[in-house]
Image 1: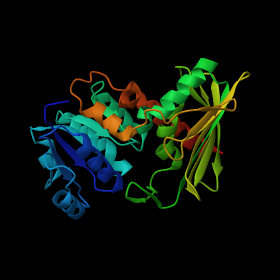
Image 2: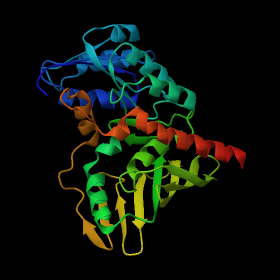
Image 3: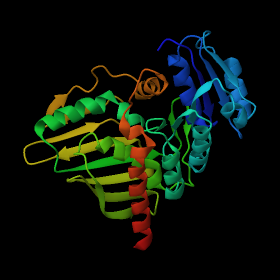
Image 4: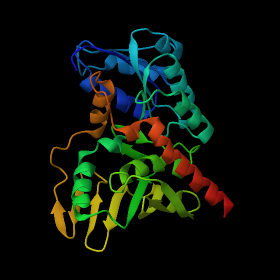
Length: 317
């Protein structure tokens, strides 16, 4: 990337600022970053005034969302709001002709998700499945596939309450149930390790009321048990896989993590760099004709359909 670009971020929470900081690190010289939040504009004004990482990239705050969407020079828009606002904001940005990056989940119900997919131009509306750009997971999946596709596995995902990460406190969006919040990441991770094909919900169960959800899912022939919690005492991201001839695991609770196959260590730290910066580089690069297709909302709606199935199943029992 050489030519400067104009990028905008809509949203004002912790993750919107993480996206802003990561973008400022990698934008081409002479680029500009326009930021706006309906409910947190004072914080953005302070951020824009005090940000000093690079003098060759200008950061300033917008007065309204309309200023961003009608700005002819803004080519890329990143959206990180409450999940209920993701789809409508992304739709507006697409209709304004922008290239759009919308955080996961890109909608909080299937009606909005399908409307966004219908509007999206292939590979123009991406969603924040940042683990798709994790080199540690790529390395581990390649080793696993050389041993053969796993027959079964288990993925443990837990977040502590008010977790401190990326310079701020991560707060749970309580309006969003666990499956809709977490499953997009889990779905995109497991796609590294299973065959292409449909996913099928086998069963699901509540954990600790509905603070957590368990599910057994058939991923194109690989049976995976998933445990998702948002009120745990520690952060966990642990994947176990096995078939008749091998077993493996990767603990990426803290990146790049530790991994092994049948007791032998797999070096997943080799060449590791920020997966978020990798994803944003792909999003910003005008010469990048294709990015990971699973980050396109047209593909990623599969995860939301599965989350909806889990939610409906739990309501029925």
